[in-house]
Length: 373
Ligand SMILES: [Zn+2]
Image (cartoon, rainbow, N blue to C red; front, side, top):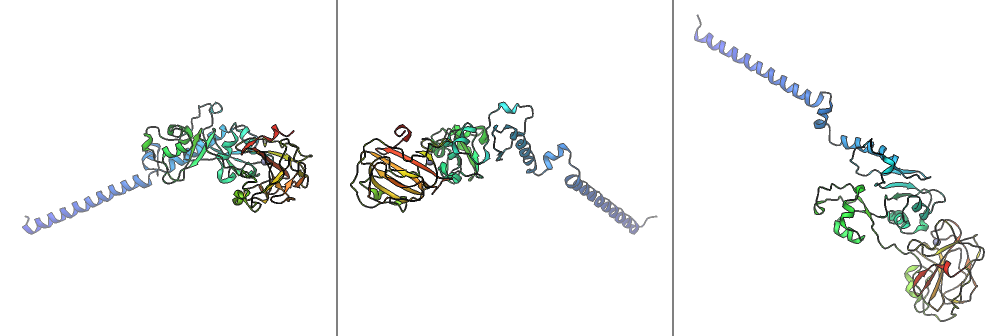
C-alpha cells in the first residue's frame, strides 16, 4: 500500500529520470549537429553551403589561368599572364586559338627589343605600349630596357588605374570613348546586368579602355627660338638667356653626321611616340650643324635627352641634337652649316651611342628624312 510519501518519492524519481533522459537526448542532438556542421567530410552538395566562400573562386582562377595561358600570342619572347579578378570557369570545349585575347598579359623586355618591335609583335600601335606602361616608360620609348616587365593590352587603347572620385563618365570622356566601351569590354568583366550608374569600381583596380587615347607626353626639346631662348629655362642646365641675333640658315640641310645612318627598330619618325630620327654611329663621331643658325640651347637637359644642342636657323627651321657626349658650342653662338657642335654620345635616356635628331618648322615637328638625304 502506497503512502502519500512513497508516491511523492516515486514521482520525484520518475521526474529525475525523465530530466536525465532529456539531457542525454539534447546533448546527443547537439553532438550530432556539431559533427554534421564541422566535422563531417564534405561531399559535393554540402561544400556549396559550408565551404568558405573564398575557396571556390581561388580554384577557378587557377583553372582559368592555365587555360588562358594557351591563348598567348605566338611571340618569340616569354609572356606571362597577369591574373586580375578572373571569376569565370574554364570551358574546355572552347577552341582557344580562334578566340581573341581579352586580358592584359605581361611581357619581359628582351635585348634588341624596341617599343615599336613589341607593338608590332602583339599587333598593337606603339602608343598602346606607352599608354599601358606609363609608370615604367613615362611616355618615352628611349626608356625601354631589357628586363623591364610591360603590360601588353589585348587591344589598342589605354590602361587606367581607377582612383578615388573617378566616374565612368569622367574617365571615358578623358580617353575619348563611350562608357559602354569600358563596361562592355569582356576583359574588364563587368556584370552587364547592372546599369552603368550602378557599377561600383574599386579604387586601384585597372581597366582596359579599348580605343582610348590621350595626349602622349612630349619630352622633346621645347620650341625654342632666338627671340626668347629663356622660355626653355625649365628644361635643364643647357638653357640660354637673352635674345640673340646671328647667322640665318639657307633652308637646305647637310647630314648631321657623315658616318651615321638612320636607326632601325622603328625609331624612324613616328610621332607622337618618336618625334625625330636616330642616327647610329660610334661615340665621338662628329655631329654637324645641318644649317647655319644661332645656338639657343646647349648643355644638359632634364628630360632624357642628355647633352642637347638646339639651333634656331632664323627662317622658321629649328634643329635639335640629343645624347651628345659633350657640347662644343655656347648659347647665342652663330654656327655655320657643317660646323662641329659636339661628339656623338649616349647621355640621357640612351642605350648606346646614337644621335637623336629632330627638325621642326614653324614649331611643328617634321620628318627629317624628308629633308636630309
Ligand atoms: Zn630617338
